[in-house]
Amino acid sequence: MASRRALKKSINNLTFELVSESYTFKLFHPEKKHDKTDQTMQNLVQMRNNLINKINNPMEKQNFKKNRKHFRSIVKELNTMVSLMDNIG
Image (tube, rainbow, N blue to C red; front, side, top):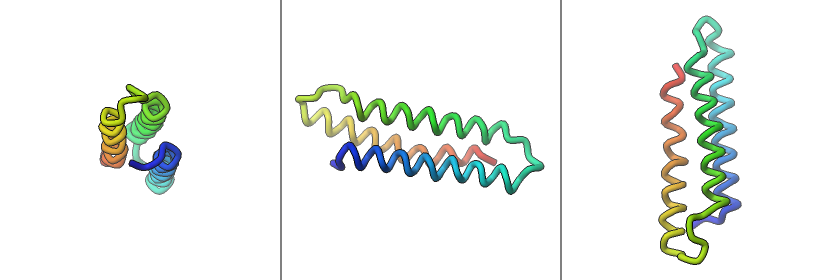
């Protein structure tokens, strides 16, 4: 399991990259309506906040097996953040 600090950095870096990609899409495609893009950016930031909250507040601090499953589920959710970018166009 990665450290909490490294996991938070990964979440922040990925969120920054995806939001930057969304802004770049908006700049290169000014003729399109950007309702989906704006909604996608809001979902990304909301998902980031939820993941950071889950990292800061694990379910059970003393039960390491449950914590391992908890952090693995966070990593899976982190991977789903990229799939939100399919809704951008």
